[in-house]
Image 1 (cartoon, one colour):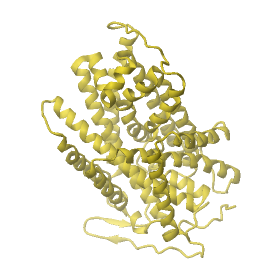
Image 2 (cartoon, rainbow, N blue to C red; image 1 turned 180 degrees about the vertical axis):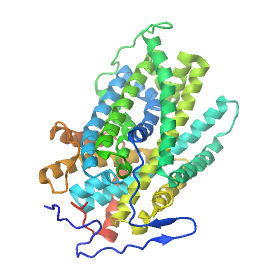
Image 3 (cartoon, rainbow, N blue to C red; image 1 turned 30 degrees about the vertical axis):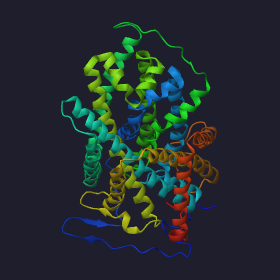
Image 4 (spheres, one colour; image 1 turned 180 degrees about the horizontal axis):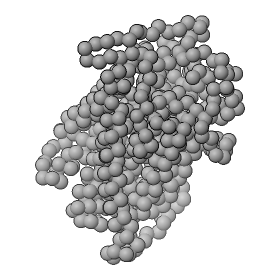
Length: 473
């Protein structure tokens, strides 16, 4: 088994170093292949990335759909999803403190399980994040149209894609100009979003328990039985995909040994609590059948029920902010996944160039933002968003497996600042739960996800089969 004598990054099995391009200077910026990303993200930035990515669909899309399937017990579905996410977040935190590098799950899996699994996961994560980002941006376009309509500015549905394209390009450029700028935007958006949700949900809880307004008649907690609680947990788990994106910027985190575990586990706990409270408030306002009929826009009616027109406006604006924060955080994470894979020579090395003027991987950002804009232009990315969930669940399961392998081998370089409590039960349960949830997805999404993984394996066989990474740091 490999130890501290493992070959350096990107070294092939014959021991030859991949060619590294020299530093290049231009009139606009200076960039190099060997520079490291600056550590500019603190705990608040890490929490903002995790919370901002997760809070979108879970709060603004799923309550109506989940209540229609499980009734008020959908709160238990969200809680169960949060428990599964924590089972993965704890092992991920240990791996991230041992390897605080940009790339996150790809980096951990390639060092723990080898180059082929790492390449498949790394390239698949690129595709998964691109698809998810496009979905967020199209959702942002719809919420932007709704927000303008509330303000009295009526625009047709044909403006959804143009708005999404403009803001997608804007978020990409923002990330090019500096991670700190993107993190500041993320911090501000998430703070405003949480403030809006806190007001609406607090008033809803007070109303639901009868401290203000008229108390509601509670519906039977589990009207459809216990099994729908489990299937609904599989549906809403897509709401928890964002916590691992904190690990993709590990190479830019200040004090990673402290901030990475706090950011990942903290974002799951905060968002999980918000999900459970949201379902309680929604099912206190309307019966499950009514919420199901309202579909993805159910929370707008819930806001109107408790706070009138102001509540509806608050939810519409909140949805706009949620999709904005999800898109911004996903573009940041996508570029770091590309950066890490390229730096390991699984993609051409020029993709990992860093712009020294801003300290960002500008080529990787282009490879992230460009395909996103192409997918946004289609306006039809819902299935691709579900495929992103499939690819993330594979990533989560393999990260838990990688932790078990690394703990068993204990290579010289493996010295995490954080150790997973309850080892080995926690990572084993995390792996089983992640792979099991894939079984509840639609066959079409499963087929597309497997197809993407096969394509990435083919790329590895064609381009990078001689690269050896396991154990390298």
